[in-house]
Amino acid sequence: MTQSIDLEELAFVAAVMERAHRLLVAEEKKLPPRTADGDEGPGSPHQTLLGAGELTRGADDAVRRIALAIGYACAGLHAHALRATKSAHISPRSVPGGTDRMARPLTSGTIEALKLVRQVSDFFGEGLRENIDKALAARTATWPPADWTHYEEQRAKSAATAVSATHTAATSAAATPPAVSGCRAVSGSSVADQ
Image 1 (cartoon, rainbow, N blue to C red):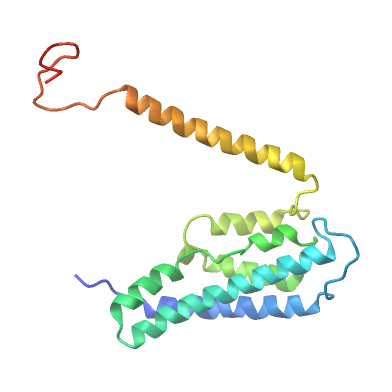
Image 2 (cartoon, rainbow, N blue to C red; image 1 turned 30 degrees about the vertical axis):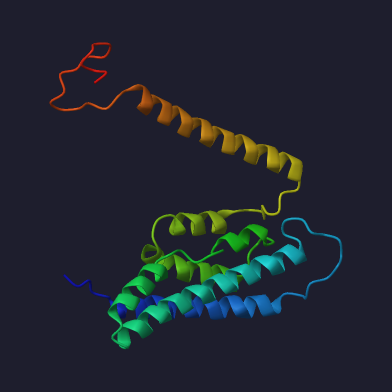
């Protein structure tokens, strides 16, 4: 069975993402150039410029991945088109993550671009819509952390908790041997050791 590629959906999402990209480019151009003013904290002009750039590049990358899938499909390269379509469905990098760096309130063009991406978020899969909603609701920039030591400690705790949970689950699973059908051996009997 040959999988089909929905060219209409790809073209629609590409057009929406390109519109969002153009809005983000326009907003990025409005920002002052990078300066060495010493303020590197969340929401600073420098961080806002970095975040805007991340958003712009993420939207552009999404358009390019979708266009590649369309191109392969139109060229009749079905296997390539399927792989490219799978790649096109990956959430755009740094969208909306770039907003974590940006001063609030976000500009109207940035908000409009994020709302456009939100309209096609189902194409990209789980989590994108919720992340956009969080970004639009955020009252302040959150990246980079003001206290790197505290950030690293929290990250280490989070990683340790994740490792511990994985270890606990693995240990619990290992402690209970899997059932084997047709086996009459009982642990500790001579039959079990054969």
